[in-house]
Amino acid sequence: MDWDHLRYFLELARARKLSAAARRLDVQHTTVSRRIRALEQIVGAPLFTRSGGEYLVSEAGRRLVPQAEAMEAACQAVTGVASARTGELSGVVRIGATEGFGTLVLAPALARFAQQHPGLVIDLLAVPRSVNLSQREADIVVSLERPARGNVVATRLCDYALRLYATPDYLARHAPIRTREDLQQHAFISYIDDLLFSKELRFLAELGRPQRHALRSTGVLAQHQAAAAGAGIAVLPAFVADRDPRLEAVLPGEAHFERTFWMSMTAENRAVPRMQAVWAFLRETAQASGELLGRPG
Image (spheres, rainbow, N blue to C red):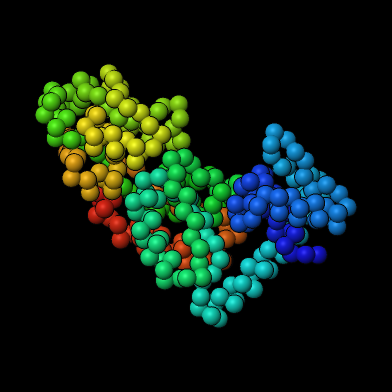
């Protein structure tokens, strides 16, 4: 049986959507459909059922999954031996991360790493939402919440600090801020409550609800730019705001937050050399970025 057929089958079984499987395989969605139809003709039974735009594995498909995964493991083992012999990393590693951390901390570091390993392709999903590991949106995920237990390898990557920031001009034009109670008189820039992708982003509840919002956004980089434009006060990661000379910390010794980034990948990827190398590199990058991250206490 053609391994490529099985590879396409596994990706669709995991992603559940043609478009997502096609992205993972770096092909057109029509190619995925063609491969699945060919495999179904060989097996003699439908391998998926359609439901609400998703492809759900059928009974015949469920029987095929463990055999396909065994072939996948064997293929990865052979690839690992070849990589170990040549000392070269090759293939694709897709990393999901929060927007700010992925853009400002990981992207520059990963660009250097990719230059050192020309056979490796790094996909970085730096997005203002949760990247789903179980649905194979990424191979390695950096998230704000510890992954649920399961067939997952997870580690605490690093802590980081967040503070209140505003422009000197904004602070000069508005009532002075000496205590937390004074914050209630000011306009805030924050997340859109009903679109929050993590409970770890509910900062304002700890400060008391502001009387008004100047701007709300799903993305921390948009909030940063709004604060830098003088629209109001924002809770921003130190690695975003401390490097911006347009901003200064508000109540730096009193109003601050600490959060944690967690890193995870599926257990089956643990033995893949390129995954091991990127995992170790991300840990090294986080450890070397303590000052940038604000060195929370």
